[in-house]
Image (cartoon, rainbow, N blue to C red):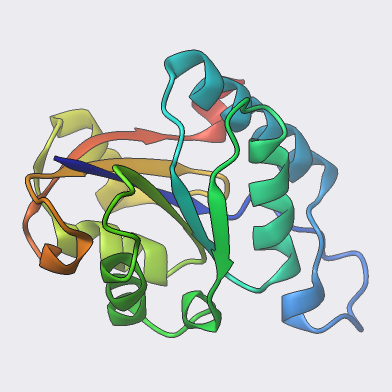
Length: 171
């Protein structure tokens, strides 16, 4: 069984309208939310073995704040495919996770991450599925499990949505 964590970057700042989209940093609210999520992952023992992250600054800052709260440090790869290229790009990146990684994480953006999560989840807890259909807030983390041995086996409608953790829930 493999676990896939799907993290949407935390709330970003819009203070500088001259900044290109990829260069936007986290807002103070996003910084707090990412730190709380890292604490939650640490406390729950849910630590990824490998992280694939979007090249956008807000995604990298979210990942860094989450990792600052976790004792074990996973390997990290940056993928341009995780920056607003559609849910199929997320599938391709997830399928490329190292076979030995039991728990992988993708750090990406909406609408791709919500579309990907909805496409992958065949079943799940009713509350998580209902929340996912409504909204995938910034800083939210979906936890999916798959009955596979290798990430290359990932396919749509094969996962179970275990939870959708939102910053509001951790506040």
